[in-house]
Amino acid sequence: MPGDDAYDTDTDTHDTHDRLISLLDASSVDYQLIDHAPEGTTDAVCALRGHPASEAAKCIVLRVKVDRRTTRHVLAVVPGDRRVDLDAVRALFAARYVGFSDAQTAERLARAIPGTVLPFSFDPELEVVADPEVVKQPRLYFNAARLDRSLCMSGADYERLAKPRVEPVASPPLSDSLPG
Figure 1 (cartoon, one colour):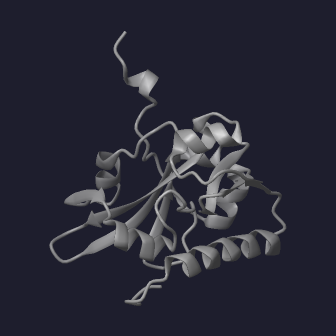
Figure 2 (cartoon, rainbow, N blue to C red):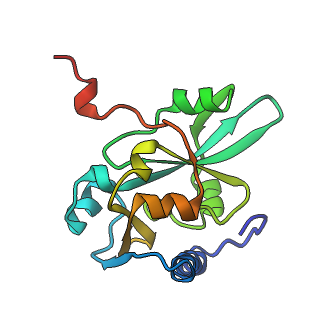
């Protein structure tokens, strides 16, 4: 947890999963849990779940250096077939620098190990920014703070519950960026 030196990944991961399920149940949101072989890479877990990567939420914790003294952390949520556009995030925050957060900070803020980060934040120091393509998905898939369990819900319900800042932060799909 924030400020704790003794971060217990297993305990916090299960706590994060349980907190997510409690939030969804309390909100009466339709969702589906999907158990599968442990996997944290987007393409592989999409194959296990049986859907295109464009329907997955890829979640990346970023370090945003606004000025010499101010650093923020942002959870960028983009479609699984896209990458985070670091220049777009830098412009969005009028920042001097944007890069990937170190693993320890990302795990502490997201309360999950890499490959299991939710598109939700349960830490006030981690702001969520979701690409518009994410929230418009009729079926949005993501790992549920566990490598062996995923969740599917509508992008509209995700937006209503997570309350992300919705901004274009995804690079164009690979097929759109190729010449020809």
